[in-house]
Length: 334
Image 1: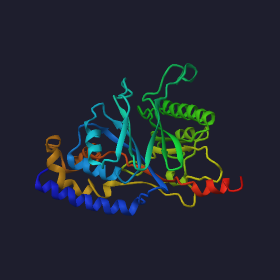
Image 2: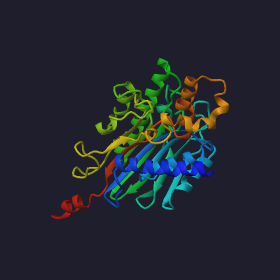
Image 3: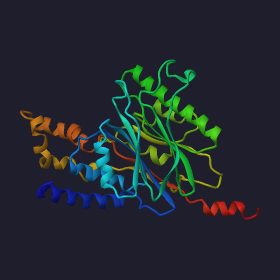
Image 4: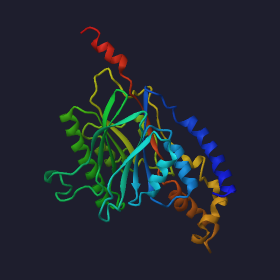
């Protein structure tokens, strides 16, 4: 970075930290888990260093983050992890073949001081009788990893559901993918007596859509505090979700309706906002030569900045993970 970029980046990071302090709960040593999901648009070796610093600052505020749309080229992800402290580690899937998959990977980034890998990871591969439309696997294979944070053991599954187009055929395919993954995971949760969390980009347009109904059809629930938050930059769509199928003792609660903390962090209110257009024009001047001011503004807002940060907001939830008091109550009279 040159001096101008360095001064801008450090100033923006201070502002970003201040806003994160106001919007995201503070991390705790043992009491809570801050879980997030973030579709980072076509995340490869295509971000400026400045942008990676902002993304890293946001990621660092959580304990465990599932990331969708990681490109086959892993340099961007690796550069991001290098900006986090040494407690952070990650898993990343193989890239997905086929036009629907777009060569995409999915990743899990986690703070090892809070979260531990429980030696189980794998893709969901459908048996013949579960194939979508009788013949298809998922466009992008969902990926499961077992983690533990405090007393809470769970299997975390991340997805990026097929989008395609707005046609009724493609909308129905999205619904079928969601229906299938929740059906499969619900059966596993019951058989294994294990808590499952399903999160990622479901391409759900609104909370009353059939795709949302499919997400909650087989025993998964999405807390109201999560449903309240659109996750696109326009704040109109609920593409991203976090759903739970929990197998815990009745007195062990990871969240409650009265105390639940969740949100979608809008980075554009601090960095790469509409007011910053003049600052960044020079970086995409070759793409907007001869364009009107209105066209330049549209390109900046809908294209350039979304490839620097994303067109999705990170969706997060705070979970309670210390069940020590409940455990002691359970065994005191044994």
